[in-house]
Length: 513
Image (cartoon, rainbow, N blue to C red):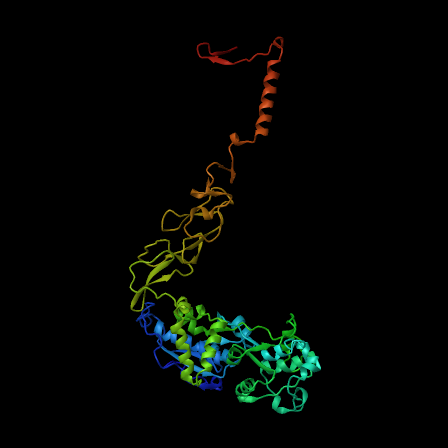
């Protein structure tokens, strides 16, 4: 089992199921992507990867998809562990008790700034694809039956006709004096503060753990109800519902709420929640290919809603969640195939540009050149070369010369020369391309030739020859020449203008005019 098999006491308080892994092989053609037998030969950790699922439907489905692809395609050992979820997930990723979480809500991620942005002790792995949205919902037939009340807009709640559509509540407004309404969650406090902020004549009835069954029963009995829900969820995926529209969020509304969830009145709608994926630092380091799959994984709202509707047709046991995820995998290879990273080539003879040949454990493989090294050889039989002096190497095939230096690209070894013309050699990353390191239209050897062959280098610039001067300039030069000729011709002969030449003759040994 994994080193994470026994979680810390503090991080396991909301554990629901220690092993919620799908027990069957789902995808049968395991060598389609050429990963068969590869994972066991990589110089990676041999421990089991712990995927954390939140105890709600969409999270469990998405987590099973990732778990199955890791196991059936890439060949890793995986444990899918079910938690209640929420803010505690961040602490488990930070400590390494969990490796991966597939669906995290910004609304719950109070740790985001501290762990992900500041400490970087939790790794952000991109958006899931589908987005989340909390809100108040009513059956669409109620809206259609009352076209003059505009029940889909919050101001209708000030209209006595609209209030008469819904059943009256028998609990105190805003749960005043009712300790059963105390709930520290994001959504409950948001609902209460929204009612206060917009001064709505609404009370909240908390239904507890049987919430979904009670709401679905009311919908099935065609009752006019207004209730809190979210997307993605079975409730919103399988029923024809209309979401109540509140004022659009301004720049400060959500900040005020987050600063004081219990007291600050708010007047804006729930924000769209861009659900994201995250991992532990150790997971990104120990399993780079599994992390790449995590980053590439994207599921649309339409796809998750379809899976939720399929799930609603089952008994919703742990196996049912895995079965629905497995069926989606077998039906949608065209979607997830692009998530699978190409397997590393083992026991290679040579490596392409930007990579070097290295022994890793029991295999010989190509690795991208790291900072301080480079490779320009397209059939490189060895490791990456060290960066030359007077240059900086950024990894791969990129080499950055210092200012006013030029790299000879005619060989696979970066040789640095000083530029004879100051200011024309760029100091920017480039990859074996002679013209990319020269400015002002120059190129060639040491940036001394104009790329446009009709021009010539002069003072670090490319200029045209005099015979390409415009006609007006040529006319002026011709006129000036003509005036000079006329002037010389008109000098009087009597002026006695002569040209004296001084000559020394050897025989006479003296000067003579």
